[in-house]
Length: 316
Image 1 (cartoon, rainbow, N blue to C red):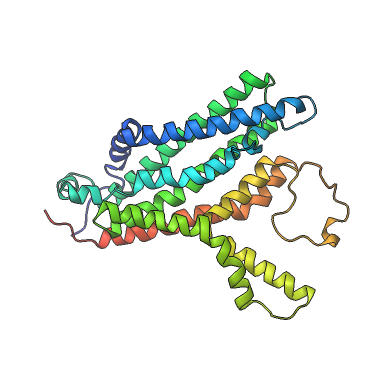
Image 2: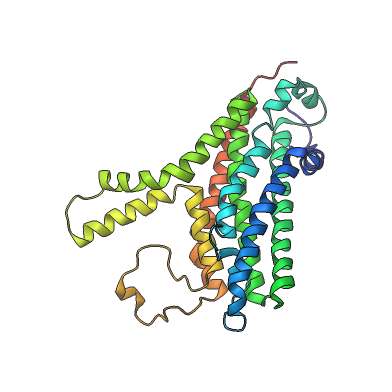
């Protein structure tokens, strides 16, 4: 049978309903409180260190995100750790909870197609992430204005907003992964544990595996060219991790003096003003592969979940 109507029929209804559920859920409020507590402490500690550089640092507000003070890490480090947890919490029960409540067949009996249901749930998760991180970003800027007393410059605002977009894309990778496991596994606990296992693999063990892979498949000759080739293999393997892509993108955005994200030869530094900041447009060009990688990871992971969901048998 050919279905009639748009494949987006009912999608925006699902987006509105799921977004409202996410934003009012106790789970998200608990995670937001955890992020506010951790990130607020990191930013407050950073302000104590950057007050002395007022008037000398042209990118003072960007330091709010990157400066660390013992024993707390920087705001960016906290986000790199907590963003996947929030995304997984939003997506690990997106589909299997409908199975467990036996509401999926009744839901699809309405004028809502399968693809519209899955797309609506994913977009609702992205909207929730965007709202949560935008609120956090504005709180950081407001705290900086209140305690530092200097407004951010135009380029600082642009770089900060680009950092917000990259953070949402990074969260989208883990949201799509959690929804994939939600489609694969009927048990919510299994989907959550599988998502956390993949996160731990990329967050903890991937950096250990990269040198081993480079040594295994790279040239074994003890020459400078062989060492460079092994380094390139190690970097390429490491960039399969969304954590590495997010870290490199935020490094180039929040530290304008970053001019390269890989091995650099002395011949490539001829004529370069070491330590001078790059223009915002050139920093965007520098991180374009990393941002493209994050977006591609979102698309590929969600596409796999979409195909599997379309082939699932749904019984009343």
